[in-house]
Length: 154
Ligand code: COA
Image: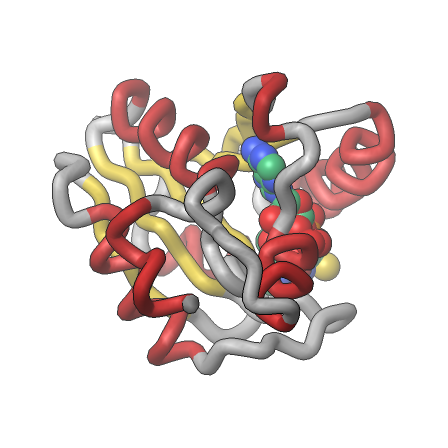
């Protein structure tokens, strides 16, 4: 049985994340969609708000569970008996950030396999920071976030 953990800040989640989540759900037996703390970020949405949005957005995707974690990703992964870590890449600079993180995670927990799902080309320009910027200027978010959370974020 495969059990993947898809970690991130998800502040807020967007269509790029949904694409990765759907692909992970088709690939693994279970996917734990997990909120983790990135020390470089100061989230705008609370953990409860992000969990609520993730619950709503993943309601119709089978075999996905939403959860928030403290501490290291590999510790949480071990605790829930995950077999894989799921991450995504859009452009070259994502690789420069992702690869060292993968190497550290691998050093800490060699048994965990990291897989990257390449982003769809039409999601290259989407990021949580862009979504937050659009929220601040009260712009239409239909092209950026799933319909299930549109009203919530707006
Ligand atoms: N399409 C479009 N955008 C995408 C995307 C896709 N397929 N996949 C990711 N993105 C965007 C996200 O929206 C996010 O945008 P933002 O920076 O504007 O918010 C960005 O790319 C990804 O951000 P990143 O900083 O790479 O990841 P993260 O903050 O979502 O997650 C953690 C990083 C939480 C996984 C990492 O910090 C972590 O593991 N923390 C726990 C502590 C730990 O174990 N640290 C590592 C070992 S020391």
